[in-house]
Amino acid sequence: MRATTVSPFARLRESLQTELNLGYDELIARLTWDRAAIRRHQRVRLRELLHAAVEGSPFHARRLAGIDLDSVDPEDLTALPVMTKADLSSCFDDVVTDRRVTRRVAEEALAGATEEPAVIADDALVMTSGAARAHAACSSWTRLRSGSSSGRCPGDWSPGCGRPGHPREGCRSRS
Image 1: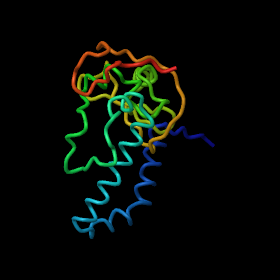
Image 2 (image 1 turned 90 degrees about the vertical axis):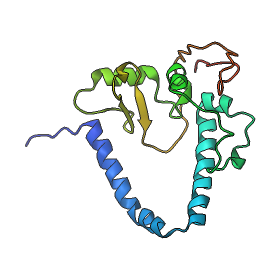
Image 3 (image 1 turned 120 degrees about the horizontal axis):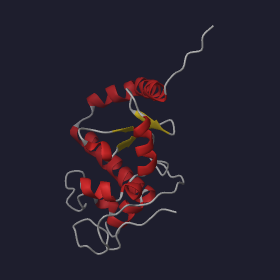
């Protein structure tokens, strides 16, 4: 009998399909929600997302400091600073909330990727888009959570640069 090898991507895809299938009833029920129910859900999820970003990401903790996260409304996001692609690129390790995912780990995974997207730690998908091979785009398919890792923020902007949304102290290395 031959053993079949299942790729990390195939395992992740199967896990995501299972999770999606288990959630269909709830998702279908949302089709009956009125506008008020949709807005309530959006407000709750936005607050959860903002708090998870602050708790899991040193970058977001700095850039959202002083903002009353519970008062941010999905219909008016003007209180939130814009995050640019340059911000993500310059402070990647501090931006991501999954501490297992670092620029080094993502680039190593991409270097070894062939026909399928790379997977880190069984549940974080790593892929590039367009000519962005040098700057990996990572997407964690798991719930936001904390962990431990080490990495270096390659920050290419200086502390106190004054750019909108940039923390005064700039990027910090993770230890």
